[in-house]
Length: 401
Image (cartoon, rainbow, N blue to C red; front, side, top):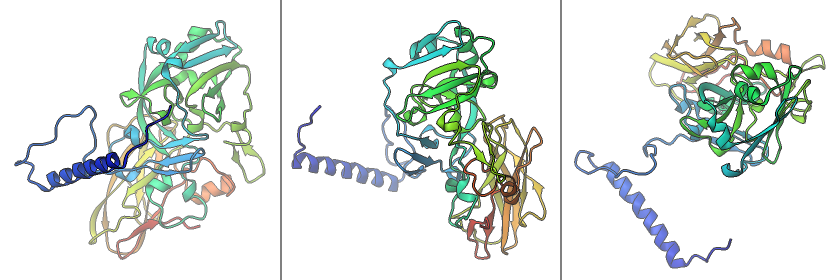
């Protein structure tokens, strides 16, 4: 397709129009809203011009973008702020041409189009997704100028809608000996992971909806695999093929990648579930506290193994811990908000949080995680995140390198 060249007059007219609209908007913001009619109704809603949360993108094909955790409230992340991770860019897939093949050790190999998937009874599940490399920036030699977004911004919670994998497995007749399946994506990386059948049957979905609308392209449009509580890479986006088998497929993404090197020279493989963790989102870099006195420490906690049952906060570098209040709702495999009232005396200190989930697992200090995993690991960083509060009120990331 070719396009006619844009004339200088048209370009200037467009620029003038845009500047005029912006000037009009700024003028309206400066006026008493009770004296001026408001804006007209629009086909799509938008944020207030006073609110400008943004992801932080890094890379292109091997791209990530971080959710602004410190700017969010509640437990549901707006779809346009949900973190991104992709290995070969975001594919453009026509939903009218989309197909999902389920084959291998099944009685009835079947190709489903998007319309066929939507004919099955749908379910909606609230759960977080998290990149298995989330928290890497705060594990080794860390910088003090890391915000919650840059430390842990590769996690987000959404309401996901789709058809249960258990329903599709019944439809195709999975054979008794099938214990694993290959999930393969339709992106240029052809992302593929081996998934145990039984765990996926529990609460796995082929999701086509997110927060009340179709998936965003960067989240797998038109359909993706969703495995609540499991590392993001296993939740294959743009899914096009599921092959049932009696053993794992040993793909590149579960041999050379997405394994956990251990200090003894071995590696932990198929470490799907994300362990309990938490992060304080206020006060945190780049916040500066004002006068000494009462401040509310707030943050989020989550676990791939179920509900968060307790979050504890320390305001003296871990010498003493006190229980924080959990904000309802507290749901399994979802972000959970916590808060704790802290009376700052104006001195130097370090504030910490640690999460406990319903299995009794306690979020470990970084020294314990380093002893178990070493410094060579690149996945599953769920250690305690510290923030150092200085006498002048400035707050910086406080992990010692």
